[in-house]
Image (cartoon, rainbow, N blue to C red):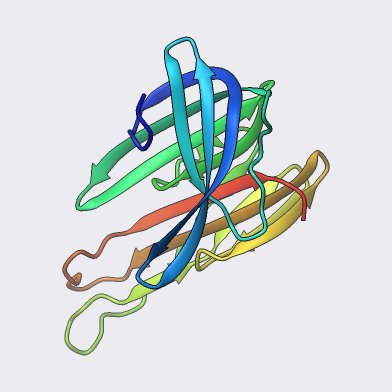
Length: 188
């Protein structure tokens, strides 16, 4: 597999390389982590954008399995990804809000108790919502795609999420309801 080539599906193998990759976009500097996995089907590469100061949830020499799938919903490309090591979840990220990929977690967007009325011009009102995370007896909410650290009985995690719903009325162009989240095992 060539560097930067996208792949979809399932891969298992040994982490042979971890590398921080810096890029600049629109004057903003971003750091990503490139994970190279040696698998029976050849080398596979994952490029993770992690919060500042958070390290990759895997190490060189560790055997992992990873699964990724992408699709376009309306005009929005969405990707789901999970990484496990020894059957233990290390990372789960879902742009579709699919809680099934985060085994051992309850993750959901709250239900609107009352939809906001349309604006004076008949346009629907956007409602930004926090995402609820629960693992065992520990729970937290996080919204606005901000990151939060959460300590659970089996370790610590970085969590983020965001959900958008719309009240009644005409939707603006390119508007969509969505729910996304990510969680990464790691220390503070």
